Image (cartoon, rainbow, N blue to C red; front, side):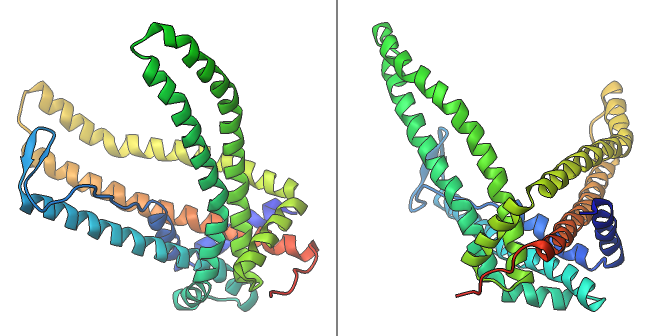
Length: 313
């Protein structure tokens, strides 16, 4: 594989078809979504941290938590669709010479459930591993809690803790490796679902097949992205220092003269924070688009040499 050609072409597509940045933004936005999990009733005044919470406040908190949960689900759905749209957009540029947000988005919508199934298959082993880890952790913590007030029980607790540590550290390392492998299988499986039209189980198997047959190029691309990530992190840090220097100077000046933080200080800081968020969103969208385009172009080259996938059942 000509890595220079793949990377340069991915950048050309990223810079030429800026409409894909919108999809990249949606992918990055949905990837960080989370949901609330309220666990108390607001039917009457409750005590929280020593303070009584009025029913109205408790109801408002639950309502906000539910709203955030719904928003998180929506963002996640949009993110999955956008992932498929980014893959389809690159394919359309390569095969048809052009793309649009609507064309790419429609493909993402049509492949949503397949991409969802791929994500579930990739997550199941990690979920099982985390549950096993929790069970082991509880098996260790319970004897330790019992032994906390009795020195004679520490020998028994140590007999449980030391084997758990010996087994737990390699298990954690294997967990990290498994997470990396599953993430890469998902990357290839998503492209198998969009580019080859496979169902979610066949796409996942195809992703594993492509990874096995192209392990060397995959590792090289990971190392390239690792280097790019370090460079981008350094650039971002330098940019933050440059942008934040004036505001840091204002804070130091205010502290030196013992002045209160009035509008003259808070307004520039708010504007600077908003500017940083906007620039970060644009930057993240470009990076997400470039990464997706690179993996899509690499996958297209890989499957040209790989055996034809089995017919979908």
